[in-house]
Length: 138
Image (cartoon, rainbow, N blue to C red; front, side, top):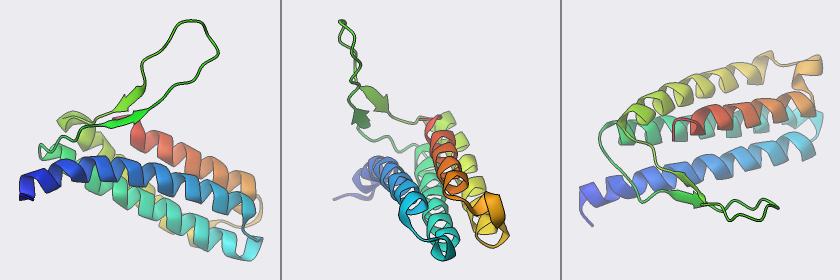
């Protein structure tokens, strides 16, 4: 496999990693006991941010994957095209910036969050917000 082909697959793998890590962060925020919630949820969100920064940097440098297709299932009569996530160079720039900020904010949140900010709702909302912010440029 050539380095260029590996870079093409890096974008797709990074997008998938962001979705999986975001889903794991939400599950951890909802199910983990309070004393472990900050560390586990914050760590998963931070790693998702790093994945976004790497994916964004790869897209910024010109790597273009085949895209991540997500089927849309709406109860309407008209069929819809699937959601296709394929960041271009400009989207890669914003994804890299958002990923870096999310990674740093999640690391800060591990030690900072206490009381209501460390609740299941707080960490779940942060994980969903971070994932949305990272994937919008795609």
